[in-house]
Image (cartoon, rainbow, N blue to C red; front, side, top):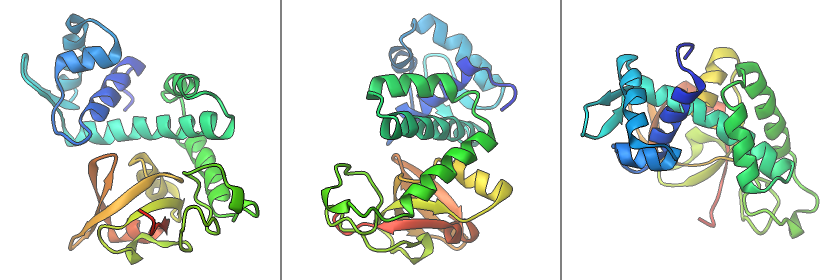
Length: 227
């Protein structure tokens, strides 16, 4: 990641978002999303391809490599976390919160990210005494009749096909950071899709993530039965 400039990180993030639900992205789509000329996209894609982050052949579709997916998810996770803070906590309008997140995501350290995550974890694990009038449809409180949730549990106890909201990551150090860098953050919705010999698969933002048994046991979630 140290060889990526903020501009190249933005390109990775854009491609990642364009590939939600698909496996490809096109130069013109990237140019439109980035609000730049198509002629300026190709040099950036070539640099990313040379670094091993994507597969790119001129006039053909672009695909992120596994290394590219890991890097893109790491960047986007910081964006999501910062957006939540500025929008949900500080009450900034969505467009302004998104702009702030885009500007700061490149500089947010692992330690800084973890501090934000701890803040959101503390909020999601404390029931809201005023939940009866809760105005947010995305909150993770366990006593809110609007959301019809069940108490916190770990992801390994959730059946395939059931959507959940992440509440806490019970891991430390590099193991915790690896989960956060996947985009598995407090208040994020995901769905367990399948069991494997080595763990499980989940759907997050229309992307499939493979989690080990150790990671699954570390992820505390709130299962919803209104979805």
